[in-house]
Image 1 (cartoon, rainbow, N blue to C red):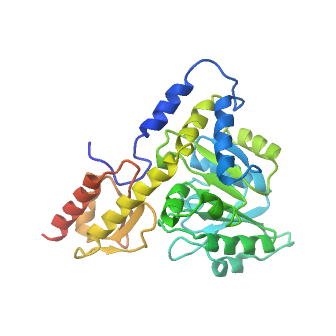
Image 2: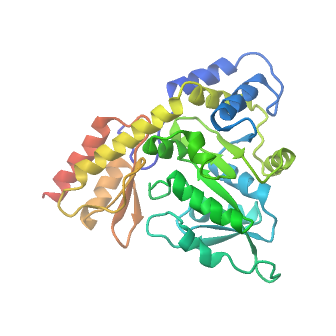
Image 3: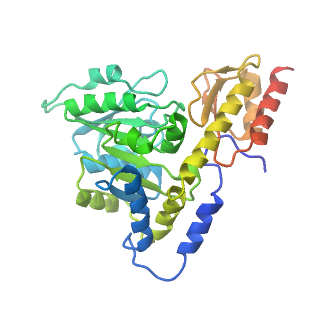
Length: 342
């Protein structure tokens, strides 16, 4: 079967992660995270981000975002996010229904919020007829594959904290952002002033599992109850935790992300000069966006399993994964070359 470039969710599971699941599948341990595997995984997170953080594992990214937002928001509060944000577009209104927050989407040219874009929405404080701004939420990397620097995060965090808000990061592709920037994750997250973080695992080679990391804004007991009520508390937590230990212990999370990023760069460079092809966003992580001639999109999408991002513009999205090979990338580039050269 040809490798898909439609999503990093289409990839399999890294062999080291499968091995870790197998090693955890021995004997009996207490349920619901009261086991040595979960303690080990939490210790890895604390070694990366600081001993004072709270960590809660969830099944999936939507669950992680919901738990993050519900832990720090009350039902009359709002979350400011990019219009393209996953929490706004691809979570079937779960933040609104389950976290009971109002989303305030902001149009952006590249998926990135800036203080200038957010500031007009910091209104209505204390006015009982308006939802009260509580969180600025950003995706790292964004849904357009662009990346926030530490300075850009800090600027948003400073704006948020000045007005009594918190900064949430949807880090489904956080590893790709860290690999792209070549920075230390603690410098990016802690130095960037992040308060609540969804740390992605599934898109980066895990079978299932994400992590909620609270740096500020929600007591640990609140996090525990919100996770349970949001249906995200795994009874056999050791199998999620063991995956994170496999990813974090020796840097596999960064190795996987760096490879995926490199494959995206290879693809962008291979197609950028083709006639009728325009790469529309900076390629900073593992996503490539491009407009193609309309007549070539359908056949190529069927063969390579990718999505049309914007039908009106003829813009497609290609996503590379930890297991994407140079041959996978070159096959798409060669097919696209043949299609546009006819």
